[in-house]
Image (cartoon, rainbow, N blue to C red):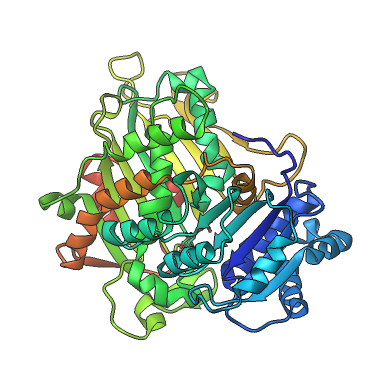
Length: 490
Ligand code: BG6
């Protein structure tokens, strides 16, 4: 994967430039990369949106966003000024071919014709096709153009295919970057490093030694201002179809022959297509869904999902699945995947529970070894071992926790996931982006579950906001002899 060198000059055109994602993530990420010296002098960022703003007004909005979303330690007045200078704005309805395309073209024409051009679609996915068509109609797609598609790519296989087709008519697959911001998280990438650069881990990475793998993404936030989107989506579509299945793929994949984008994506695809389908009766036994009810996070009282929404809903804010990867390496190993909103804690982690040793000297006592890969917060790893308790004369055991954080070697902070990904597009490095066949395979696998849930074949459980999920979760995982990792239990 590419290091953190400076990129070639580029023009970044953001559709949906006044939206929440642009303000919260995209502009702060580009700012930070500029601060670190990774963005060349003459790079430009052109925001477009339907709302009427002058360049100065857009700059003002951007400045407020940096003020709010860039951590104080990274704020430098001179860099902020330099960053704001790079910004421009064009009022444009991306779906209307008679909109202000000429102005956008005039601005882009100020750069040399071979300048890297990135079109970032931070809009509703239904608009991707129309924007692409208009870019093409107005001759804005050059050889050096790339397009970034934000999730969700569809709500099922059919709609995903329609969205992909609508963009593929105007861009070649190598120009299309489907973003999954979890792949920009350092610790997700570190799963590969931990597995393949450590013989001690690599040697035991199979059903022979691994009892189960748990992948959790728990958030304290609810649906915030996104209830309209979320209620049509739900936890399975919003988090599992993309982020968590990607993490599962990194955990389960075979070692790629080389460190290149296609080899890695082929290896992930092989996992996605080896997932045992959850269909028929299995949907009832291998899946769990729930909604949060009124509760509290810390001292803060929070409303239940339905109260927030203001109407009845059959959308889950919690989902847990038991998945199996049908390959020789993973024979019989359950992968538990769970995600929830309004959890007590914000924590994303992968927990590998190893099999207990049988028929050894100490086989009646100690606990299973565990490797915990902390994706966020406190990025790092923990390994638990059994050790003799020195205070006892016999073999009484205690658990040793060997933990370490993934600090950077130069003392810098771990970059936000978007920072890395936004510049990988400029560098033409698609390794951490999702290929079309991966999106399709993931939808194919989750679709039977979504359909069964839509038909209410699985009851909707409930959990109090500020807890770790429904009480049924315990029995769900017990069925295969496991426990949820204690970080979420405590
Ligand atoms: C997004 C989901 O993709 O990921 C959100 O749409 C969720 O619902 C977010 O809150 C979680 O991202 P992170 O980086 O905060 O774990």
